[in-house]
Length: 494
Image (tube, rainbow, N blue to C red; front, side, top):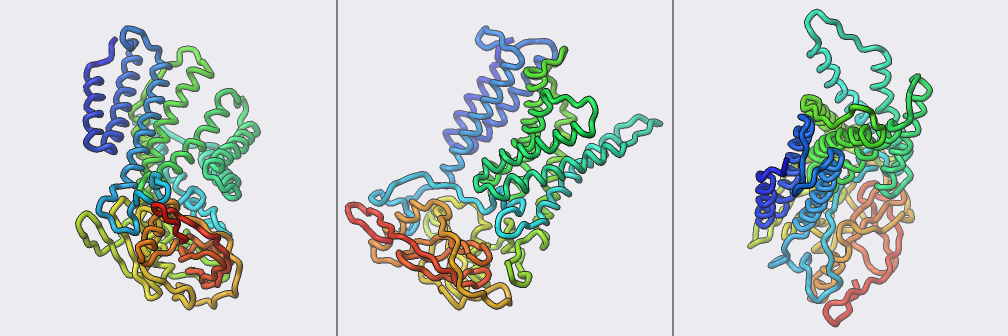
């Protein structure tokens, strides 16, 4: 059977849509690839075969081509997201414009407020056990979908029972995964390496449990499946947290897409590696739909649990903080901004109680397109954020700050680090352009407190620096080197 002309028409349509909107074209690409995959599997399932310009395609080769096609779709989607996050700079204020004569131009990086370790409460000096517990609970609740389905679909008069081994297995799997996350993500800085380490730990622990308690367990193929599930799940979380502006969407999309991908990969492994006789690709739509429902339930339970008070970070050596719903460490999608427009520029402002409050509000915004500027006004100064990162338009206080805790501020400490947030190169260029034009501009970096570990966006300068932590109030001592940026033929120190 030759490729259906409808598919060729769909691809042509995708190209036309991509000319109008690159992100829409990328999304349509996923839809077309999925449609081709489902259509092809149904053809093979009925004993027929596909051909590409007269050359027959075997079932495994067809699935592999679809997976490669998904890879191209993902590459195009990421490129489209970067284009959106960079945005146009025509008519933008000087403090965020990509000045042609200054510095080195590069694509704007998409900032994100939550990383993989933060999501599970494993970053910082204290582990937030509530998040791991909610991850465990969400997995258990999601498993109940299959229990309900088994009960509903049993014939009349028949009895269904779930042995103790089933419930123990349902509990052991997420418990071992949480333990693997703790081992893999707690002490490894790189998210990708941490995800691989967590998947490896899970595989070792889970395989050991199965060899000890399950007779007749075979390693062939099963070890690969055991490794792929946590690895692809965690990779899905990493990519979704970077690409999605809403935490709930990130959890939902990563679970659904990872589940569908794993279903295909498991069948490829069974066919190509284990080579079971009579095995062929099949797609059980009812099972896939049930998996989507289970993924949605997991995302809803986990997302709701992360908003609970005992899933939020607390400062070391201080009383529990009272945090409003607009300033939690996990993104709140209901932030209220006062919006104003000036030409093509969009300005969003809001009032905050403190610089800590302002920092959390701005971190919760997610990725910001070009010509869009967020600012939070506080009694200690106004902190802003644009597509490149944090910025200030006037000096903010460096000591005597309003704090969210009533505990006394600790003594002076040495800060842990000074790091950039967002696109450091473009921020430096914008600051240099402003200073060259005689306007106020300071390079803002994240100062990691040596007492509580909180990262405060502070104004910096070359030389010794003392800045008060926005969270615990400790005065942090640090040093920043000299930064010189070329603006045209002139060198500007920032």
